[in-house]
Length: 392
Image (tube, rainbow, N blue to C red; front, side, top):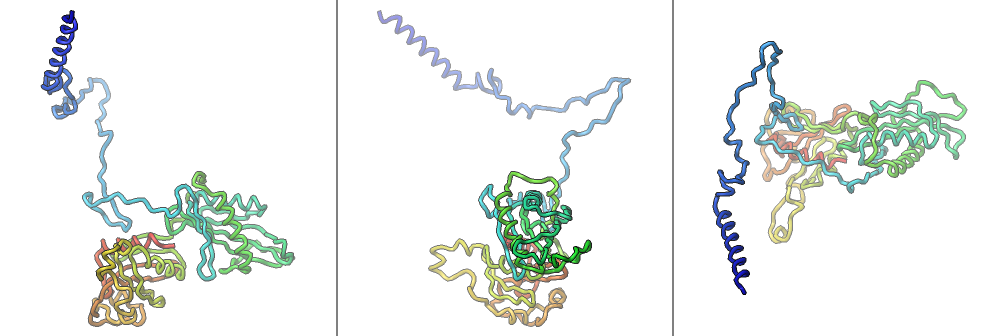
């Protein structure tokens, strides 16, 4: 009575044995098997005869639809990069939380402005709405240069005067950032406004300037977000205030900032991300720095063993510039700097000289060694990129 069950068991066992036998060889899945893979068939592909157009029909030459162009990448300084050396640049770091817009009031001396971690395409329409919301007439609106000029504004606590404001919306020192600067002019309330206004360099009434600046900053902090932008505002404020270039084949960073701010923001950057600002001579436009990219990574072993950069300058900067190299190129570069001299190299002549040269409305920044000589272009670019990242 167990025979049927035994027969079924033997049948199943035989079928499994056959399957296992076939699966263990190439009969099913080999190059000539029933279920062979076709992933390498392209290796057997050959040339085919070109298409022949029948007589009597137009014959146009065939061209590649997806032609691969020659690639000649250049870095930010304009130098060609070999394809074997090219690296996709990392995105610029954003200091604020993702999805949020940072708004700060920044001040340097008598200058005060709004900084926003948002593009001009977002800030421009919101600034226009601000004046509309408070019923302030806009007489001039020029997005090409980021200019807004208001009509007369009367304050409740002052019946004797009227004010007008000039607002400049400019691209910041970093991509996708904006700066808003305000200038105020006032006149007696009973005096007719001139159609041709000569704007002062400094506001007549700094208090009124700051009132509007604070109110606008609060409004922008509430209304500007990363989801709304204006096509009209994309080109507001011109280009970024910072660019890289080559000046006489030397890597250079150019800042379109007034001189005081340019030097202050460079000095700020020279104390971050591995830089140590040992000494400076603002009147000479020189900064003596050390650089250690691992300074922020030092741990237990660095505390046990001496190493790294000295905390104090190996030499005062005024002494250092008395021993610059006597090379002709160095003498030409430092010809306009007061108090420099050319002599023998000092012991422990380490670190770098960062030279900040202001001319007109721009400031150029270069990095030299401690004797004023050029350093390797790749090294100069690396240091300038780090400085640029920390500008404010």
